[in-house]
Structures are given as structure tokens and as C-alpha cells.
Length: 103
Image 1: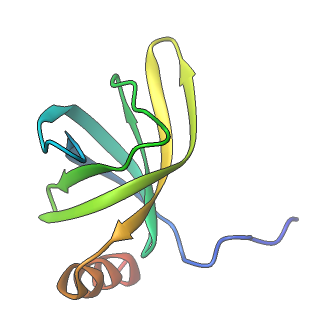
Image 2: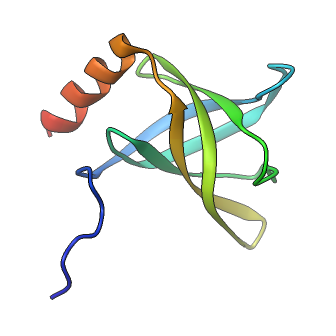
């Protein structure tokens, strides 16, 4: 059995998120978060994102965070991204920690 490499506990979930351009804040579309932790998320979408550009997400927790892509893959027109939070307000960090720890 391999040891978990992640620093933060992962919570499987299904959360809908709106995805915005990080510079113009224009709505690009929606995604579905399937994995959540205190430091980042994994989600799927039909949107092709530029891996070098930050973007903004509004999660229906409610929570809004700036994100950076750590890894991406595409299969059958669905993009799967692993991202880290690059800017997280203290109130959102507390809310997120409570959600992850209550599971």
C-alpha cells in the first residue's frame, strides 16, 4: 500500500462551479468539482483552459477563489483539472476547513 503524498485530506464531493476568465472575469462556463481539500480541488468541464493563466471559480458552497492549474488531461471532450488555490480569503479558508473536516 502506498503512502498518501498529499499534505491535505481530500473530500470526494459533487459541487457545481462557475468558471470565469481570471483577467476579465467573463463567465467561461461551468464545471463539476469531484475532489476538495484545504489547498485545492479537482474538477471536470467541457472548457479548455490555458494551463499558464489563472482563472476564477465561484463554488456553490458559496465560495469564490482564484486558481492555478497543476495538471490537466482530456478524454472524449471532457477536461479534467487539478488546481491549487492561489488566493483564498481567511473566511473562505475557515469555511473550507470546516467542510473538509466534517466529512
